[in-house]
Image 1 (cartoon, rainbow, N blue to C red):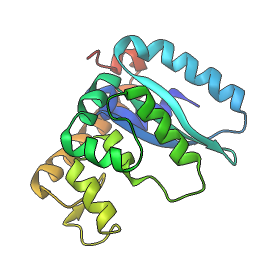
Image 2: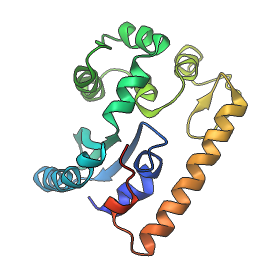
Image 3: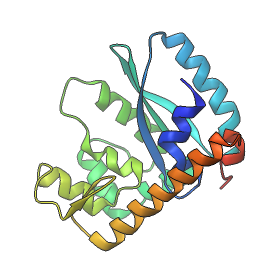
Length: 183
């Protein structure tokens, strides 16, 4: 797994304007993935970011890059806590929440749509997505919006601009450490 993938898919998290990003990558060798993630974590953990594989199967890995302090704050929201509790999470324990998400992703059951709470999606939009079965949304971008459409559109644009700038900076030779804001 290359740093290029992290820059392409996680720029808003690297910039400190988003709690987490999720992306898929090829994983022909689990040991190599573990080594690559260890190298990345050595660079990024001091800057407040962790990268973990949420699921590895059939030659692909689902990778989660996140800011633990921001995630802790997001999951402390009363609406987020209520939703997480419905799905068996222990919202007061960040590591337990991430581990429970991993277990839910690895099970053969329905996809855990509460994952949006781990990606800075507003709780009302996550709840709306689940209850409306991905229908009846006001607009969509990084996620489907059921609540504040204007705020969401503004955030979508901010993430888009950030991603473009970060990729340009990466192409011009900036390192992943230089591009990662210590928050």
